[in-house]
Length: 87
Image (cartoon, rainbow, N blue to C red; front, side):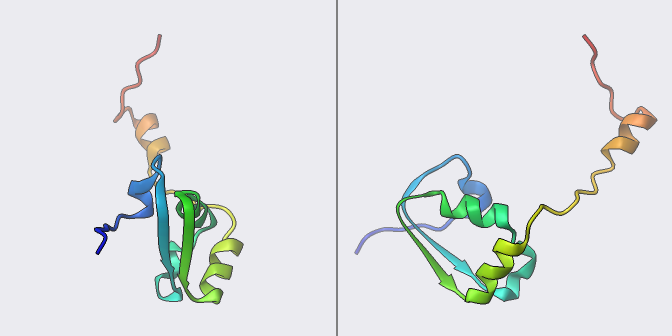
């Protein structure tokens, strides 16, 4: 027996592991983004295994650009709700 653990791709950013197994299925289509798949695949140092559906991999690869973020940052800055220090 060899101990193992699981983590998310988000939490693994900046880390590297000897082996990575990535489940990839269409049921979680909102997570099928090219940048997320790239990050997951590049975490593996020696071995990367994708388990799931070919269709899901295709959806992730064709996903293209990241979705627009609705942070309201522009509105907060304009309203003065966030103070920006100027030097």
